[in-house]
Image 1 (tube, rainbow, N blue to C red):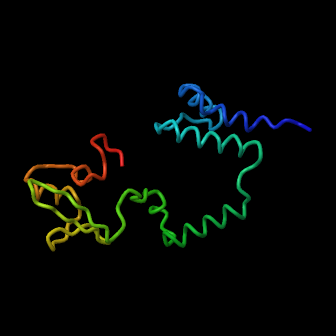
Image 2: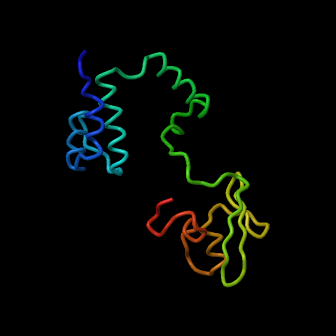
Length: 150
């Protein structure tokens, strides 16, 4: 019985230094590592290591995924490069914020937001209308912390 070194190699990624992860990235992808967080680097390296040893997706699987993508974006290749706004609350969600003793309620709509019966494209515009000063709307309504993380 032969020993498969891949599980041990994958487990070692968790304790590998970030500079060494970036070095492995250069070796495995033949490009510089992207400026993403460590967890992203670990997961993509783990996938790439397995892909190179065990093989990648079958061509028919790739074609099926491409067809599904075309169904979702109508074949518009520009849309494929646009990141979906995954952090946006689901349509119908109500956001509550108390400001100077008054409860403010915003409803998420399909095209933006609604506050006091009026449509708005951004939460920042609503926060400015409520406070009279510039605010990051996501921070004002507690959807992101001050460092910008969701």
